Amino acid sequence: MTLAPLPLIEIDHATLRRPGGPIVLRDLSWTIREGETWAFVGSNGSGKTSLAEALAGRMTVDAGSITWPFIERLKAAGRVVNWPSQVIHRVSFKEESRLFSYSRHYYQQRFNFIEPEDDLTLDQFIRAGANAPDDEIERVCTALGLQTLRELSLIKLSNGQTRRARLARALLSRPEMLLLDEPFMGLDTEGRAEVADMLGRLVRHGLRLILITPREMIPDWVTNVLDLDVVGERSRSEIPIERPLDDRTTASAKMRDPARLVELRNISVAYGERNILKNVSWTVREGERWALVGPNGSGKTTLLSLIAGDHPQAYSNDVTLFGRKRGTGESIWDVKRSIGLLSPEIHLYFTEPLSAFRAAATGYFDVLAPRPTTPEQDARLREYFDHFGIAEKAEQLFVRLSTGEQRLVLLIRALVKEPPLLILDEPFQGLDARSIDRLRHWLDERLRPDQALIFVSHLPNEIPSRVDRVLRLRNGCVVE
Image (tube, rainbow, N blue to C red):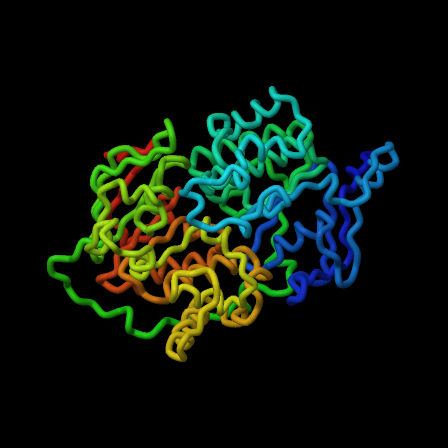
């Protein structure tokens, strides 16, 4: 007689509700057992992150129960465990621990001098709370491509590097179970393969692991998949049907002699002895559709920060934006007035307690705090919320939305003023398939002929069909 593997976690008819918000999962019964490695999949708002929080003991259930039999076995063996979070480590979208919080920093600080009392290096971040020996720290950092970055300020790392740093810190804490929320988000193709391979080795050596990841990124060592579109309260068929925007964005007119929006000539950026960009030249004109590609750490974020007016080294380089050379009296707000920007980094710094509607409305003013809007501006915002299928989320608090829903709100924030230049840095991160299709259609069909687009992605199949120009970076240099 073969005995069934021992249960790790048991959920019995549980109902989960976001704090102060709606029910996200109802009457869920589910068991994870020893030897199983699960992936959670589902559309935006289906409850993936809420379920992970509940498994880590960070969310109470409205009804039903969650029990942790493996923790009871740890206690019986003499382990002192008072809370599930002591032995279950969840790596979420952004770091908001006591060690580091984006709410204590401002966005441009990523590119400026950091006061010593505010600085936190990657090495300090990884070591905090970990009793791991130096050789283990070096082994984990090497496996995650972080070894050469350990002396850098954490705030200056790219999105992909920061996510790997949080994963390294989690692994060095030696958790009994690890919950990874979108572990491959923001990683280039090589980085995703390296992280998946490393996690697979750890699973084979006994790591208990649960992933939240898109269906197309599920590694082959995952044994079970929980589809929350099937077990959750709402199904795909209940997502509002797409309604097109009005015809203001569909006018077609041939432009003559398109204006130069961005002119970079032999740009070089360095921090001390570390070169970030080396002799980069690039011109972006009205109506051009560009893809900006390159591996993590190739200089894409720094290049975009020069264009968006955030990087102070623009003044020591030959940078002309929208017809004005940087350093000739224009302000950062003069630059941002002509740009719509969505990036993973902007998402991290968006911590104001605003409704989704008010958060999107800040895009009219290029700030992260609320400003009054006109009835015409509000009407335009409602069109976008309706178009992207989140009209019912407009009055909910931004911070209580799912990660994917937050990304859609910040996408609307970038689009709503219909700027001459639209910069979308990995815009599909965290979005479900239907939201990606809506955005792809919008970019292919709804951008004005005179609007320029810079689209950043690690996946070639994500690049919209109308994008016909590519700038490739590697090690801070343009690759032909």
